[in-house]
Image 1 (cartoon, one colour):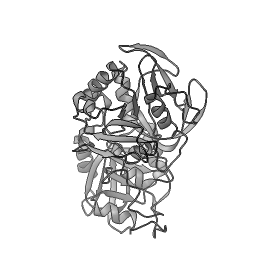
Image 2 (cartoon, one colour):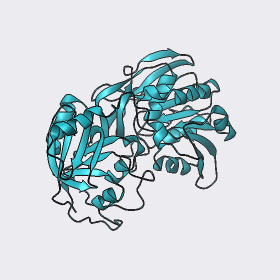
Image 3 (spheres, rainbow, N blue to C red):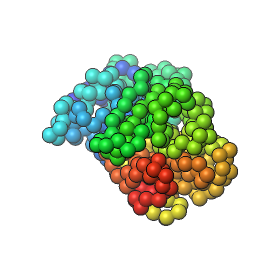
Image 4 (cartoon, rainbow, N blue to C red):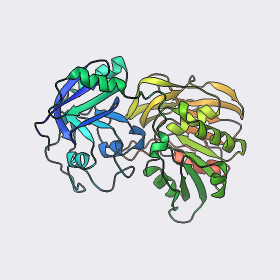
Length: 382
């Protein structure tokens, strides 16, 4: 339950938002971003891509369905802090095991409630995602001291974070039923539902640490390689980019999502940049350049690949193209290599809380490993 302990959110530009402590009490620092999802807060909180970010929920009431033991996307909550407007007083769901604030407190996640999240979201849209801090307890009167802490904290641009969230040891998610393919998945911050989605399609998934070498990948004898989602600035991911280039040279079928899309983009010679406030939510449209179809997608990223919708470009591995884009702002949402078997998307076809328009992309990956063109399916996410 929310208590009467004062709390304050301090942004690096000096803007402050006061409220009450929610979850753990203390102080936390990170990049403040907003997520527009009306459902799926548990998946958001446990998504490794949110590492070192303070997440603002734009939906006014959060916590209605409590917290269960089945929907975590990883082994822990990864957000640096949590900002909500109106916490549910009593959770109500047959799968709920405890209240959201109980789980936040148990995992030491500092939050704040009672914030005007509409005003805060508008401020982030206008000024951009920025460093911030949540402070709760008696020492919340000295705003300048708190802001000094925020300004001394590291920025997200240039942050090398995938190594913080990758698995320490390889593990295997077996195929459901008869195994048809084996995939080596490079864990840059993989979500639990991703191997499940592949396993349901007869794919045995070997999840490997970020530090893996080409020999480590080849030892799996993979039919394909997968690049996962993850946190941080893709400009820092030189090891993953070099490894991806080695995979492309050997023409092993490759599929990447989110951070994996940015890694493939860099491997193909494209640059990346930090977006003003990014895309985070489960209602973001994406257009397939070839078919004109629109998929409503789940997204969580603050960086993007340079390029224009439908653009074709030369790479060290032959021709490639920008295959998908966001009609809201024209940003690149997908890449496809035309001369080697590789494609990627910036959004999340494994979205556990939905939507599921893009789920057929896993069928495309299976088809690619089977020798069928990766974009030959008729799935809505294509």
